[in-house]
Amino acid sequence: MTEKPFDPAELVDLMSEFLDLPIAPEYRPGVIANLARTAAIAQLVMEFPIPDDIEIAPIFQP
Image 1 (cartoon, rainbow, N blue to C red):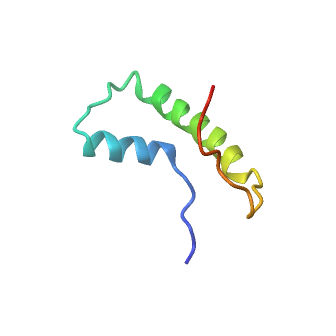
Image 2: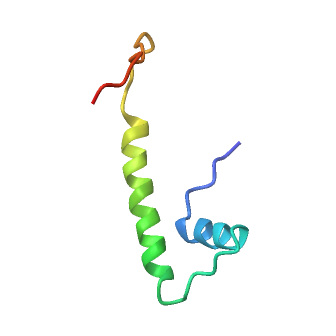
């Protein structure tokens, strides 16, 4: 199965329709650009290697 490349414009359009949340035409390019930047940041996080034997912290203490 071939994975379809991420298309932020398509996702913005689909989610706008799904959520019944219209996006004004003058804001659409900014929303798409923001989603593309967020996806790029998420890709960096997802590519970070984590060893299989790592354990999660039992308690979060800032």
